[in-house]
Length: 248
Image (cartoon, rainbow, N blue to C red; front, top):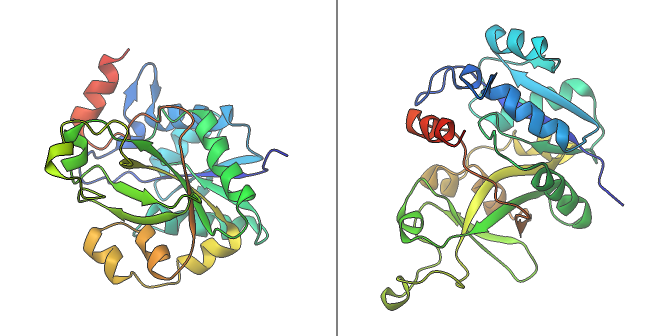
């Protein structure tokens, strides 16, 4: 049975590397509208755009989205999603997909996949996706988050460093090795989400600057599977945006 789920899209205006990112336009629409269209195609029960900026809210409401205004004090998109979810009064077992507001190429199939993965693995608190790494530059790039997983599709660890260590004589051919990049798409159950955001940042989270390590260090299970379709890449910089525009 296909999972029922809601999508919350966190969107803030003051990105340090690309200010005003949700409202930047390409291919005839704003970034946030492209993401919203991806969410619609996944056929969730509902979609919320969670923001603290009236400029984003005005644009989103103009193309028909439901907007939830949230605090300006949040330090992460997860905190913003938790506030929006609490406002909806969803029960603890409700599945919520965190679709980042800078993922305009995220396939709807992957959004459905991450929700289904959480439903199918009731002992996991979070679900997410990954993709094989085949290029050495991605393996060595600290901006590409790597992940290792068990044979039972549970995350072992996430890192900005090369993970796992690959012997030098194998670095010329990563294809076929168990080397994965993390795809920043998550699903949570509403009850767990509210608990997660009350926990302080963990030592590993602080060291790696990866929020999901808060869950792993606490002993919580993160289900992870290889994405069904190419997830593309999030838009973090002006160069990312130019590459996206060049794709047409």
